[in-house]
Figure 1: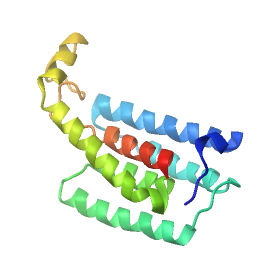
Figure 2: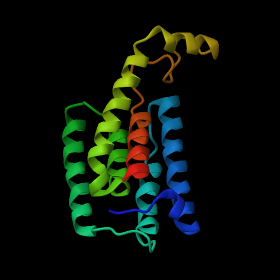
Figure 3: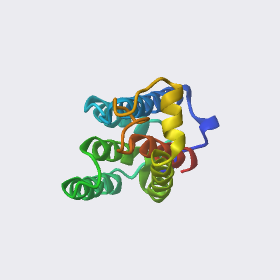
Figure 4: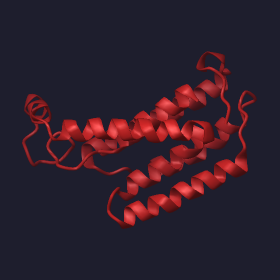
Length: 167
């Protein structure tokens, strides 16, 4: 997929991109609050992609992109079966794959992994508990500030935004 600079996007393409970013933000907020990503968010991200793909400034190879997305789904199912990632995380990764495209996919993986590593370090630091106390969140009451899991939608969104911005 070849996309022009963000500054060269048509108003319609820019509006679609803003909707994509808004949906990613919704996934992040849900994951931070409850470690769950509602099914309708990845579905909306996928449903919005054709509006992005038909923009005149986009050049997208549909078949290779569909095969990449299918491959990501298969690998994601294996990661879910091995309990390495949650189902919501897998659905979100599959949903953003067409958006990042073939050219942006390696950057997406690298940025997502780096953001996930930083998030894991933060989850195991005293800073996280300090923030929880500052916000009045009691330990063990749920949410990302007191839980032990990593809300990976944060890393997925960071990787997707990096890939869409650069690619």
